[in-house]
Image (tube, helix red, strand yellow):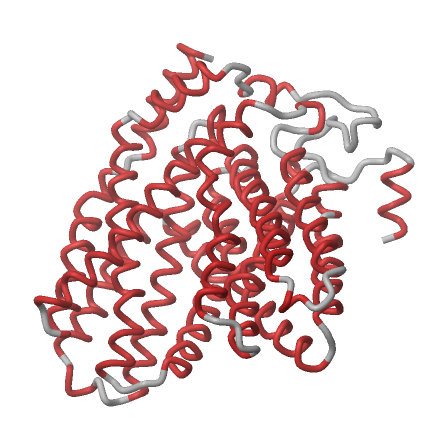
Length: 445
C-alpha cells in the first residue's frame, strides 16, 4: 500500500486498464463488490433489523422506497455521463471516482448517526445519498467495460462482476447481522466505509488508457481513442442513440431482453407464493433457500458462466441455457407428485437460479457488444430500463395467470415466453450489426 502511494505522489504509473486483462477483471469485480455493500445493507439487512426492533411495515416500506428511488433516475443520469466528463482523466473514470466518493461520504454520515432507529429520516437521507452515488458508479463501470473490454472478454467480465456483487450482498447481510448483534451500528458503518474506501484505490491509481492523468494536477492528456468517441452536444447524443438503437439487431435484442425479464420475474414472483401457499413452507425457510441458491448462482456465474460464454459464444450459450430452463420447467410441471420432496424443490430452485444467472450474464455481454461506444452509457441503460419494465410486467402477469390457472398450468405458461426468446435470439447477428455500426462510424464519425 505504501508503495502504491509513493507511485501516485511521484507520478510513476501503474499499467492502464486498457493494457491489462487481469487488472480489468480485478477492478470491475472489486467495484461491483463495493456496489453490493449498500445494496445488501439497505435492501435486506437494515429492513430485517428494523423489523426485529419493532418498526412498522409502513416505516420499513417508506425507508426502502426512499432508498431505492435514485435507481429510477438512471435513464436521466446516463446521458449526462455520455455528455460531460474530464477527458484527460479518462472518459468514464471521473464518474467512477465521483460515485465511489459519494459512497464513502454516505457511510461517513451513517457512522456518526447516534440512536439510528429513532432517527429514521437521517437514515433515509444517508441511504438516498448512497443509492444516488451507486447509480453513477453502476452506469460508469458498465460504460467503461463497453469502452475498453475486447468483445471476447465481455462475458467473463460480466460473470465476475455479477458474482462479486452477489457475494458482496450475501456477505454484507451476514456481517451486518453479526456486527449489530455483537458490536454496534457505528462499528458496522465504519467497517463498510473502510472497505469501500480501500476499493476506491483501484480507480484512483489506475487510468483507463496509457498517458492519461491520474489526478487533475498530474501530467497526462486525453487519449485519442477517448476524444474520437466523445460527443459534446445533446443533439448528437440523441441522434446517435436513435441511430444505434433503431438498427435491426438492436431492436431484436430489446425485444428479447423484455420478454426474458418477463419470464424471469414471473418465476421469481411465483416461487415464494408457491412455496408458502402450496408447499406449506414458512417465509423464513423460503428466504433462506432462495438466498443460498442465488449466492451459489452468482458464484458459479463468476467462475463458470462467463468463461463458458466466452469459449462457446454468447448466442449459442443463451440458446443452450434457454433450452435448459424450458426442460426444467417441463419437468416441474409434469411431476407434481415430487413437489412434497424437499430435495426436488430445492434442486429446482437452485438450477433455476444458476441458469437464470448464466442467461443474465450472457444478455448483458450481448448488450455491451451491441452498444455504440459514443453513447454506451445511455444505450446500455436503455436496455436495462427495458429489462426493468419486463420485470414489472412479469410480476403482474404471474398474478393474473394464477387467477385462472392451477399450479401445473402456471409453470407451463412460463414456456410461452421462453419459446419467444428461443425463436428470436438467433437473429442477433454480431457480424451484421458490426457492419452497420462501421457504416455509422464512417458516416458520422
